[in-house]
Image 1 (cartoon, helix red, strand yellow):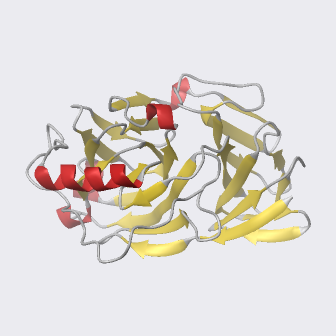
Image 2 (image 1 turned 60 degrees about the vertical axis):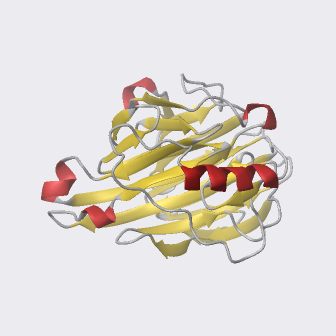
Image 3 (image 1 turned 45 degrees about the vertical axis):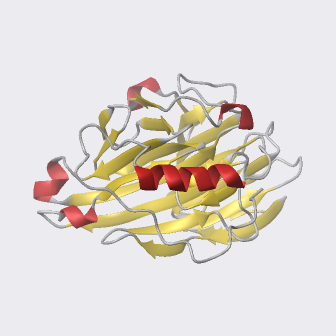
Length: 298
């Protein structure tokens, strides 16, 4: 059954606006997904200023998953990875014990401008893997299975669903799918996971006889098999998985332990989390923390 509808809240990241969906006050996580940002769509002008880039910043205890519909972003991190992120590819960075990375418009968009549109999600790590070695893997669009039926074209970004899997290594059971639907087309959500959601990137869909629009995440609970019907040409992201238990989140840090968050703050301030090897001339400083530590999220 449909349990909750979450509307994206618009956030300005300094010249680049996102719609923040997770975490939400009434629903902190969906399976292991603890963060979900809808980036753009935005049409950047020629000569994109470097102030629009995301400077080097740290993470612990999670994997970031960057997925684009349009545009190009250059990823650099402290493992030495440098990768142009393009539409349809999977870029999975596991922070583990500590990583830093930057996201810059260093490709053709820097000079010529262009549309940037995508999703960045964070997947929390199981407690046993929170201190794993940092890593980054890239899988091109041609490595990911595409499936569907008349009116539906879908790509399995990560995990297992509908009898399919791919080469993207995940740390816990989950599914993550990009689906494009023609008007009138229908798609269900995988039934084997206890926590499931659908985010409407564009268009309109019907679920349980109600209409929902772009910028809304539909969160489902229970054993029923929800089905979405496209009312217009629509793009949706399907996601979910097995819950991992409560997590603390502060800035870019996720952990099952509050003391580990405090250690990460000190590590970033002291330089113990190294900067990206090819992007070490600037960084985002640790924010001021005037408020008490947040309650753990589940």
